[in-house]
Image 1 (cartoon, rainbow, N blue to C red):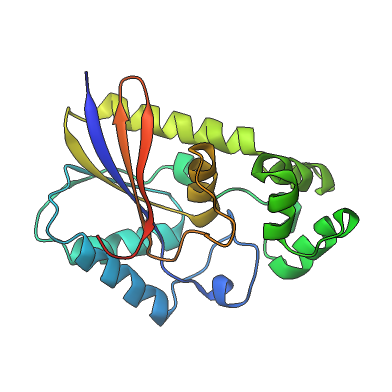
Image 2 (image 1 turned 30 degrees about the vertical axis):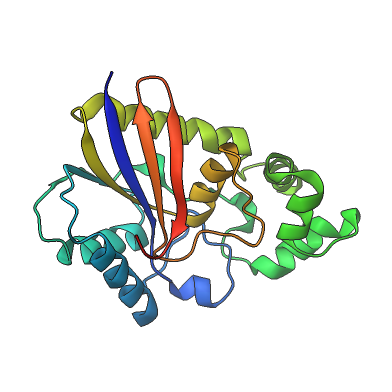
Length: 216
């Protein structure tokens, strides 16, 4: 049985994060705070010898990956960034004010925030609701995101050796979706910038071992 450990890390804070914008496939630079978050995560991971390094192909993830690796004491095989590990796509809502968008989507349900809506309907239903309210129906559903996760994990499993240690730099709602699928309560527990989530992957399953840690 092939087994690997995947250290999944969220990118550092970006300009659009500070402006409360919906940042899925649209992109922005890390702020100085985001750079420091990436460096601190790199220090937490500095003693680990990674066999492979994967990342989203979005610039903020690549920036974070590079800062993380600059803190590491070991060399690793850096794999070409892959769109499978991109953030969730928010379709029509990309770049718009997140608080206002969620208030609009949540209003018919008697609540005002995304977390309240998730608490009421569940995360899969909320992702479907955004998809349905998107005028172009482009916003990704929960199932579509999980299909990307599965394809990405299958890719890693196929191309890495047994007992590998793997670093994966990706995005907040993408990580949150996987955590929810593993039974983690993510309400008021969104992946932090630079937060580390640890997965164990075998031939038959993926198990979330730790979620959203700033220190190991």
